[in-house]
Every structure is written in structure tokens, then in C-alpha cells.
Amino acid sequence: MPATRRASSAPPRDRGSRRGITLLEVLISIGILAIGLTCVLGLMVAGRTSAARSIVYDQIGTVTENARADALTLGLTRIDALTSPAGGDCPVPPLIFDPIGSASGDWPEASGLHPAVLRAGGPISVPDTASAQPRPFPIAGYAFETRDDLASAAPSNDDDLPRNQFTAGVRSFYGRTTWLALLSHPFTTPLEPSQQATLTIVVCNKREPGVMPPPAGTLPPDLRLTAADRLEWPTGTLVAGRADREVVKVGAWLLLAGTTADPVIPPKVHRLVQADLDRAGGGATVAFDGNPPFAATTLPRLAYLLPDAISATEYTVTMQGADEFAR
Image (cartoon, rainbow, N blue to C red; front, side, top):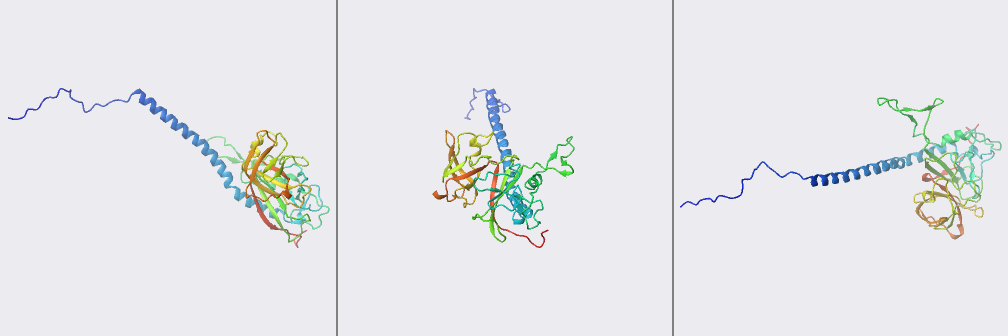
């Protein structure tokens, strides 16, 4: 007897039908998408900042090498091409070249830092510097500003390209990248031809012209290194318009020099790799890049902040004297 198939009591299933998406699932999907887009937006902002910073740091090596070449070309290693802002013979080192940082070229000399400028005659000049006159500061300042960031005018419409700006027929630039130089050797005697010295190139970004490194005009400076890991200053603002934590921080650069009691100590630029500020202000526990040897006999040391410095590179140079091309 053949088996009979038992009919199912369940209703027939429609193969073409499926379950729809609920409103709750839509809301959850929109929430996940919103969170993802918010994270992407944050990454875009951070990426843009990192890209701008990477461009600046990528140019450090090029700017530093160009500055070193400019220093040699301008005559910073030519004894007969250097003078003080008031004129006369080449000052006794250590010498500081900083026409961007000060309108008059002066630096506090409590630590023996002597401001130096180029003579009006330039690197090819007469050996007798007794009556030498300094080069005008606008020209000297122009030489200490890199011209890799040309100033451009916004296009008039979407189809035009940006155009370079010109001032009195000369192509203009923003001057956001500047440099200063320090020439020193471990002696307090005048520079001599064929003598080796240390040329330090300090590159700065967005440094305001006419503002000296703080503390400005204070004799002696208020900022000093009292111990190998202790930086102290009077309670107050070191740089006008900036909080102390914005200038005394990791990555900041300081020019440390001996006091008037220890003039033999040559000045040197150091980078902070640690900066723990006191809650009450007026001091910080610091550490320097390379662990420089600060002995008890070399402390305290006067300090000059370089709040906009981004690099400092040392070169060994040989001083030059007058030659047959001098006039």
C-alpha cells in the first residue's frame, strides 16, 4: 500500500517576501555613521596641522645650510668685514648677529655677548676697521630673512592664478623664516686669521621683528640656570602676551652663557627635552638635549629664551683676514 503524504497545516511561504528594516536599525546606522564622520573630520584637522608642521621641519635642513652659506658669503667669518653697531674694530667674541631680533642690534651684554654687524663695505673691505661704519640694518635684516616663502596676491577670480607681490619693483616675501648667528671660541681675545671658531646657526619661524629674546634690556637677565636641572626666574610673565608654559616647554631653545664672573665660558644654544614648571611659577625642572656637562663651577648661567627657534646647528669655521681682493 503506497504511503500517503501528510498535508502540513502551516500556510505556504512566499519565497519573494523578506523582512524589512526597522526604524531602530536606521537610527543606529545613522548614529554609527555620524560617529565615524566625526572621527574622520578630527583626523583631517589633525592631519592638516601635522602636514603644516612637517613642511616647516622639512625645510629646516635646507634653510640651515643656506644660512651657513649666506653667513660665509656675507662675511661673518671675515674679521675685517665685522664691526659693532656703533662702528669701529671687530668686537671681541662671543659675537651675536641678530638684526631681526633687535631694531638697533643690541643684546644685553651682562654675559659678555657682543652684538656684531656687517660693515658698510661688506666682506671685501679695507683691513683698517677703526673708522668702519655698520651696514644699514634694513639691508642687514633682509639678508637674515630667507626668501623661500614669497608673498602672493589672491587671484581675482577662480580662473586666475595667485601672483607674486612686488614692492618697489622687488619681489616680496613673508619673511616668516629667519635666522641669527653666534660666533664664539673659548678665549676672551680678539679673533685672528686662521683661528678656528664655532658658528651656530639658529633658525626661527614666525619670529616678530624688533623683539629681542626675553628677558629684554635686563642687566643681568632675570632668567638663569641655577643648577644643572633648575631654571629660575622672577614670578611673572617671561614673554609679553604668552604664558610661561608656552615658552618654557619641551622643544624650546635657550642660549646659555656664563655670568660676568665667568666670561671664559662660551655661550651655547641648548634644546629642552624636559620642562616641569612649578605650580607657583618662577621656576622649572629641566633637562637638556645631549646631557651637557654643567659643573658646579659653571653655575649659575644666564639664559636667553628663543621662543620662536626651531633648530640650532653648530659648524666649525676658520676665520679669514684681508686678502689681495680687499679694497
